Image (cartoon, rainbow, N blue to C red; front, side, top):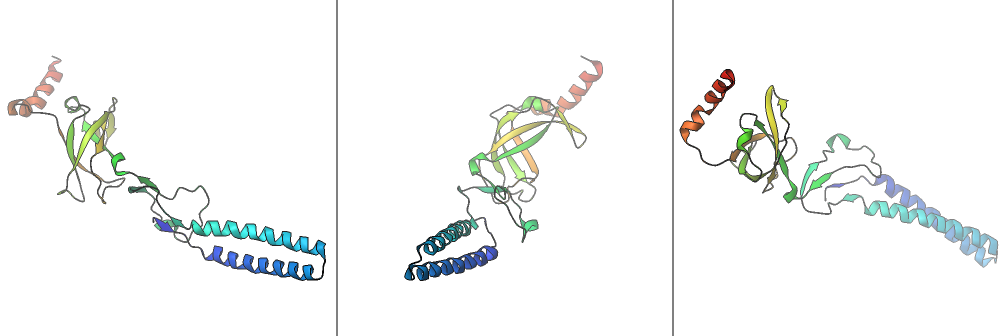
Length: 202
């Protein structure tokens, strides 16, 4: 159960409709005893009309509890600001994603994007739980660089292999991608060598 709607107005309306339905049924019974067939038909029709309204209200009451059709994680739907506010049919109140569909987006510096390949694996540590890393697999590398926080980066989409209660939209952290082994000398001097090549246009 994700939430329960306030049903006081619906319950009051249902009580009023039940009273109207009982009144029309009584009118029909009296008319029937007096053999006034036309009045019987009118009262029965009114009772049937009210009964249809009662059925509609009872259906709404049965749907007052919002239940997710699948197990998953709520990725959208903070209703604290909507407490007491009316909702309409068709309003999106929650979005629930199954655990296997959780994704994260990495911002890889442009000087490192050449090391990353689709299928690479890694771990993501969130800022709130850095001691509990989540394993991931690289799914997609967007081909166009973007400027984010004054840095040129490439966006990389990864699939998370586990779901945790603290993983939700907006959570930030640090990711490490396993791109294989290279000699320490290459790793330590690569940035300096690339800078020299750019300056000399080699």
